[in-house]
Amino acid sequence: MSSELIGYILTLDAIFTWALASLVYKWGLGKTEPKANLFFRLCCTSLGTFIFSLIFGNYLILRNLNNSELISYLIACLISGVSVTIGDLMYYMSLKKIDASRTYPLVQTSLLFVIFFSIFLFNEEITCSIVLGGTLILSSVFILSIRDKSEKINVKRSLKERISEDLIIGVLLAIGTAFFWAIAYVSFNQARILTGDVFISNFFRVGFGMIAIAVLGIFQREYYAGFKKENRINLKYFLYIGIAGMLSLGFADAIYIKAAEINGLILTSTFTANTPMVQQILSILILKEKFRKRFIVAIILIIIGNYVILFL
Image (cartoon, rainbow, N blue to C red):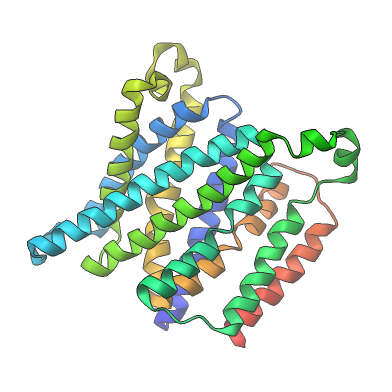
């Protein structure tokens, strides 16, 4: 089996894990507060990444780094951990301002930021096939986000409401989410370059993110709500979200960066733009969500986009 094929398999694994985790988050957020489950999830994910690092990693590689390299490595992990946490916070805040159908496609623009950083920081090559294929895949995301006719009729808003402060702030927060998530993945990739490892690096970056929220929780106690007695009734929802975090942020992110080591960050990130489509398929199969005709159009764009990237 070629290394390139292994990279594609790892990317596909990450996509399915992220998509499944998003369904768990969607289900769990109906019973829990975002800030409370964010910190609880980070605590669970820190434990999960530590276990993964013991199984798949080798801490002895840190001894091979000189002081300068070690400092650079820890800074990269710190930037990645804090960035992904800020991105998560902005994502939740965006969902409070605007609906998910607007937020999710805007968040997918993180691909554009990843491409920008990869070209100017790592001198990665971008081809016409990646640009064309990525454009087709991103187009499918926006098609999936279009409202149904019934929703358009029910949502009667004045022009003033449509350009309200909440809408503007929500859009900016979604774009900010994409920006910080891109920084998180690029800096995570840099940590991988310095050590050749992904699982130990993931443990450090998630740990830094957890510490950042723990400090923030001193001033905003709602972040600690997941550990309070009154929330024990919802403990199973927090645990499910925590497990999803272990598999998504804790494992899928690591194998995504491993795939980036094999096939490059730009190509790998372009393929992960397929995640919304996989999420839609799983939502229909598992959550029994409504099947929409535009779903077929989106699938066609996805297939063409992936074909262009792989074979042209």
